[in-house]
Length: 229
Image (cartoon, rainbow, N blue to C red; front, side, top):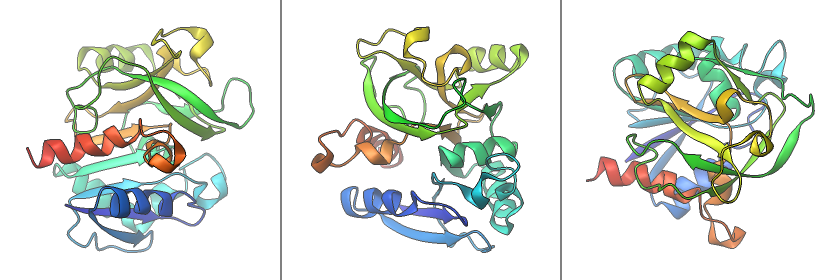
């Protein structure tokens, strides 16, 4: 499977993602510069974390105008797989590929720590290997508070589009386990068609045995399990 990792000015998690896909998962990976208009026949496009364009205006608000985004939007609308992590998630919401928005954390502070998540559905390409158990995945963001209006939230629930929710280590979903004030503890969502995915936590930072945490690796195994099943 061929993955494309997009690099914007200010991206800083691109090589982490390339390392996991190429070295750990043994997949073909290419880096796609934000000014490119050729997706190089990739099967799966990933927008990594970082601070695209310095997070000026709003996180992801400028990156959505990069030339490559027109290609990615067309790719996604044609059914192609796209995933955004952290800043990549912000870019996908700004681009209209995913519902909702990412606002400043309730604390108005940058938060960098391990959090616990719970997969809310196994019916997606990136979650099919997860169970109901809590998983430990790090976050690193200042604007990670997921927000959507009531109508959008009802649609997300009805269509089983919520991928992950923040929880405690025992899997309990409550306010105390919510690190940033996200509505309904939402940590990730997908589109109705289930080919575009976004999440604030960083699974690529929890996929290597050297880090003593491989809870994120199951996400990548889910992708490959579904594609090659």
